[in-house]
Length: 357
Ligand SMILES: NC(=O)c1ccc[n+]([C@@H]2O[C@H](COP(=O)([O-])OP(=O)(O)OC[C@H]3O[C@@H](n4cnc5c(N)ncnc54)[C@H](O)[C@@H]3O)[C@@H](O)[C@H]2O)c1
Ligand SMILES: O=C(O)C[C@H](O)C(=O)O
Image (cartoon, rainbow, N blue to C red; front, top):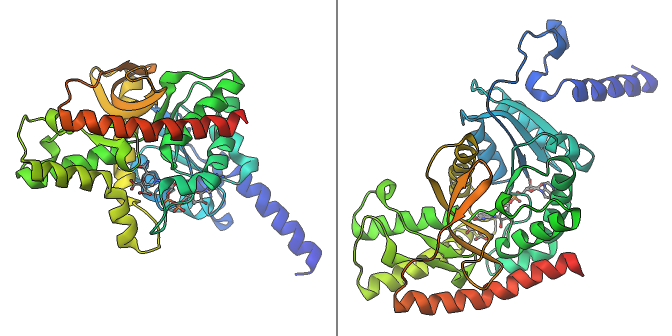
């Protein structure tokens, strides 16, 4: 083949790849392309996009969302490797139609028409780093992605996983305010992993079933801002002071425990994908109109004097439909709350200033 022919065939391959996204891509030799197939897609269900879908969280999250019966269309967007991830996941014989999108020029196509957008895009921690050390890179990534959401799917529910969540949620809110699309009920910071960890660790200490254990975790998603309310655990139970100290410390530092164990290769990905899907599923059940869908999330809130705070919220067709108060706190928790608020205030301000500067 001469170079002109090679270039022409590469051009045709590029066009074909665009017209036939990987979920429907077939070998030329079989003589069928997407247009020839009888499947029409469009089954009842929600349209979900994952931004950062080729990453450590993104891949298992995509796998689990492809298994979710509430999802009819799943868009996988990243700046690298989405063709491979999409081809792989699209072979699963579950209902959702999967489409891959690669690079900034395909962001708008990835977002158009979405009901729920989940954002795990961005760099993870290495040992010795705080989540705030990720701000310089991840703030810009979240800003760009949210500008795309404001333009292409301003009604979508947005689940923000990228760290530092305490600042990236205020960044998202400011981007949407600037675009005139901000709906505080639709922007949710994902703190579900703190709850998942709290349920696991408390169940372990007390000898309970983690699936039957419910630990509210409020505040934010970093160090002392992660505030487990052990006085409100269900089923009702009591702890020794030693157990309270151990559990509070382990829940607040669960992320660091994983970062150190992974020794430089990243942070929690598998438990995070599990937690992200648990939370996304709750958002979709809310959108469907299910009653009493309640989870903890970091949202615009008037529960404290801070503009953002994580508490239990009720999810519905409009996103966050009710924000629950903190409930009665004991002295230990009240002291923890003061520490959490101090650090949270600075992280929120940092996020807001990043957009307003
Ligand atoms: N909220 C939580 O509880 C929680 C838990 C774990 C990790 N995290 C955070 O999630 C983020 C991702 O973690 P990970 O382990 O998946 O990291 P990773 O590096 O494995 O994956 C990140 C992915 O984001 C992609 N990406 C980078 N810039 C992008 C852009 N502009 N647009 C789209 N995609 C882009 C990368 O290509 C990569 O595929 C980190 O910031 C991490 O700290 C949050
Ligand atoms: O700890 C991290 O950096 C990742 C995440 O926020 C976590 O809690 O696991």
